[in-house]
Length: 147
Image (cartoon, rainbow, N blue to C red; front, side):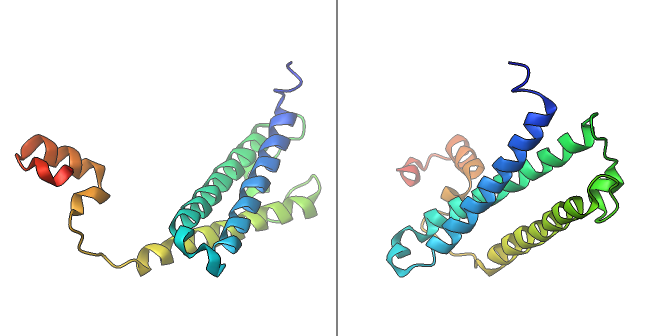
């Protein structure tokens, strides 16, 4: 049982899981561009963003596990600087560069999505923020706006 939970197995599993999430994000993003999916575009966009962020979190987990591994030790500079690693510098550099590129794509796409969304006046603006629902529920007598 301990061989399934070894650091080596966790490093590989987190790498494959990150690859899975990033591939899933790519497929959902491509699939949402089809015209037959117009009605589900918002849902697919949500899945696309969520799988991308899960991929980023598993990449960070993968990097932390590699950094803490005792069998093939990597320093933090070897993980963050391309071509600086002593062990297989080309493969380590490809991983580091792909992490940076993915970080740029993920950060810029979320920035542009949030920037392109214009605030819209809704009939019930508190529906977009659960904290406002709690506040309005606790401090107002206007019960009909919640139903």
